[in-house]
Structures are given as structure tokens and as C-alpha cells.
Amino acid sequence: MVKKTLIPIGPYHPLQEEPELFKLYCEGEIVKDIKWETGYNHRGIEQLSEKKTFDQSFFLVERICGICSTSHPFAFANAIEEAGNIEITNRAKYIRTIIGELERIHSHLLWVGLAGHFLGYNTVFMWAWKYREPVLDLFEMISGNRNSYAMFKVGGVRRDIENNKISEIVKVLDLVKKKTDMLVGAVMDDPVIHARTKGVGILSKQDIFDYAAVGPTARASGVAIDVRKDDPYAAYPLVNWKVITAEKGDVFAKAEVRLLEMYESISIVEQCLEGLKKEKEGDIEVKVKDIPAGWGTGRAEAPRGEVFHYVLTDGSNSPARHKIRAPSYTNIATFKKSCIGQTISDATISLAAVDPCYCCTERMAVAYDSKTGYRILNGNQLIALSAKRTQNIKNQS
Amino acid sequence: MGFKEFCFKKSLWLFHFGGASCNNCDIEILDCLTPRYDVERFGMLLVGSIRHADVLLVNGSINQRDKSRLLEIYEQASKPIVVVAIGACGCTGGIFAEGNTFAGPVDKIIPVDAYIPGCPPKPEAILAGIVKLLNK
Image (cartoon, each protein chain N blue to C red):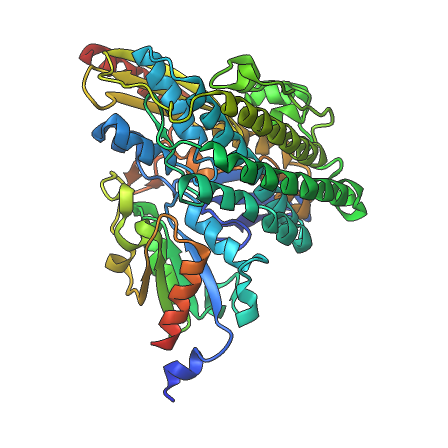
């Protein structure tokens, strides 16, 4: 009988920039089981959000995750605007969409780089991150910061994209398109990348449904799920674009989906810029006096999948309850399918393939038990806990 | 030249500890390594083990689960080591300081030599911070 070996990855591993612990149970070189522990990144955001006003909460939800720092405010704004029945101006819609899509471009470039890094192919890492810089410069020009943009507010956006900036944005987009061509060529034709990613970490269509995976992870397995098409928001119904899917479900397919999505994003931004020229400059927000009691849900397609925000309002100026579900939360569960049965070196790229974002994911703290270490709740206990909390909220409102 | 100056004279090796952060500072630290900023030209390198490192970069607010691990990592480090707190969360706890799992900013847990504020600080600011520290 082969002895099982435990190989820990993390919590502070040089491969990952975020703290999380994976336990690979291996027999020889083959991964037989995988467990993961999170909680190193828990900050209590839902609870903090309830202490802040709606305007302040935007800065907080932006800092749920630095990479998807538009998706969370986007979903939060959608939720509040549904609760308050607010219709924003077209110019605000276009600006929101532009910021969201530019973020997708920089996030996908970041992933391509990190995937190369995970494969030990640092050339891809350096090239991809080099061409991410012009996109960050655009953000700095538009919002004043490279990463957290603070562009969103209830009823519109904080800053306008003036018409004289449009030509500059188009110029950068052309550069990014050219460099994407190069990256696509480099990744799609590289025999090393083919050998390392084809047939690795396969998720079938059924697995996607079983684990409720979202975003590029689902689209790479042939499930055309995209909130931008399924439940259109902001300016997405006003522009032409298509959902990119691939069939194979392996790591290569996920890379392909992300790379091709960047072209769609560039095209969406260009169309939005055209739309922006037709709208009146400065018409970026509607005055919102108060948010009535009620609730709203908001969804947005982050670079990693669907972000869901639920906001319960009680007529005051802060959310009474704020519930967040991030895409990585469901995508991480697919590791049980994609990593088991592979060699250790392939398991790491399978872990990276869903573009996991642990700072988005950590929505719950598990209490310490002084005698046994951590208390881990099982499924039924979690459901009971959630039902109890819902009942409490119902009693309050 | 004292022992400490001798240790930090050339080729600093960095170890990165990401606490409960939003990932922005982590990415900006990685960004320092990429072609535009390229800290490797100064001999700086991100290393995998704290035992090889001269500088410990800490970013993010520290929650109760990270606290003991940060202490442990600091104790494992070969001394002398320079600790740099990066970002608003690393310096003060930032927007997360009121959270229910917050366990104190970095300087309440381990001694900090330099603070680089910003949310997130730009790669230039991170470089400038480390250079200032070395000239001290």
C-alpha cells in the first residue's frame, strides 16, 4: 500500500499572493484528496457595511477585492438602485460600463501573467504585466488612482470622462489590442503551454452544474452563463457583443476564453465611447434624496463570474443588512473535481485556473473552540444558522 | 560600518506577508517586479522563505487568525530584519480597523521600521520607501 503524504500549500506561500491553505493528500505524485482552509483574509465586511452610510459603503465594498474593485460597487449600486427604484442617466451607464470592462481587461491580463508564473513560465508573467500597465495608466487618468477607482455612487458616477479624454483612451485600447494579439499568438502557439495545460483540470458540463460554477470557469466548459447577457444592467443592452465559450473545460480552454473575452471588452469600451460622445457632458448623476424601506438585489459580472449583493434598507441612510456572494466562493469548490487524480505540478495550475480570489470569498468567520481548535460547521448547521438570521431580520423589519 | 549596515549594503531579499488585505497592495508589490518598475535591477528579489529574507513586507489589516502566524514568521526570521508596513491597512488598519476580527495594526504586533501609506501605494512609493529606509 502506498503511504499518503500531506503536502501543504500556504498559508503564506510564495506562489500565491493571498493567504490560504491547501492540503494536498498525495500518493506518490498523484493528488488523491484536497482540502482547503481560509479565514486568513476575513475582515467582517458585511458587518462593517451596516455601520456605514450608503455613500461610505461604496468605498468599503470596493476594498472587498482589489482586482474586482468595480464589480462589487457595481452590484451594490444595482442593489440600492433596485431598492430605491432609481433610474440613472445614459452617460452614467456608459461610464460605469467602460470602467467595468477596462477592469476586465486588466484582470484577465493579470491572470494570464499569474498562470504563466504558476507554470514556471515567467516570460509570460512579465509580458502580460507589462501590457497591463497602460490600462492602469488609463485608470489613473480617469479616476486618479491605479486600483481603487471610487467611481460609483448611488444614482450615477462621481467623475465624468470628458470628451477630450476619449482619443487618449482609444489610443491605449489600440495598443492593448495589438499586444493582446501578440499574447494570444504566444499562448496559443506555444508548445510548452499546450503541453502543460491541455487536458489538465478538466471540468465537464455536469460538474459546472453540480458545483454551480460561474464566469469564465463555466464558459470554458460550454455553459454560456453571463450576467451581462442574462440579466442586462448598465449599458450592456445598448452595445453589441457576444459571450465567448469553449468546449473542452481544461485549463487551456479557460485561458482561451479569457484571452478572447479581452477583445470583446475592448469592443464594448469602444462602442461605449462612441455612445458617450452623443450624451451631454456632465450629465452623470441623478439626485437621490432618500432610499425607502425595502430590499434590492444587484448582480454584476466580475472578471471571475457573478457578484451578488443583497441590501435590506429600513429608510435610514445605511443598509440594515448587506449580504455579498462573490464568484470565487462557488468556483473554489470545483477544486474537488479538477485537482484530484492529477500530479502535484498539474494541481497547482488547476488551482490557479479558476482565478480564485480569496479576499472576495471570505464571508464568514468560524468561532474558535479553545479545546478542539477550530469549529467547523457542516451543511445543515449552516442552513440552520442562515434560517435563524433571516428570521431575525424578518422580525426586525 | 556596523553589522546592520553591512547586512543591508547590497541585494536585499524580500519576503511578502499578505494579511487580511484586499489584494491591491499584494498586486502592487508584485508589480514592482515587472518590467516597468523592475526592482531586480537593485538586486531585490522576492524569496519563498522568511529565513532567506532581509526585509519583511507586511500589508493588509491583521485579523485574529493572522496574528499568531505573523508573530511566528517574525520569530523565524534571521535577524537583523527590516519590517515595512505597506498600505493604509498595514499602517493603521485603515477601513477595516472597526471590523470584528481586527487584531491590531502591524506595529502593535511586531516592531515596524517603515510605513508606506496609500490605498494602495503606487509601486514608485514602495520603491521610494525602501530606498529611504536604506539611506537612514
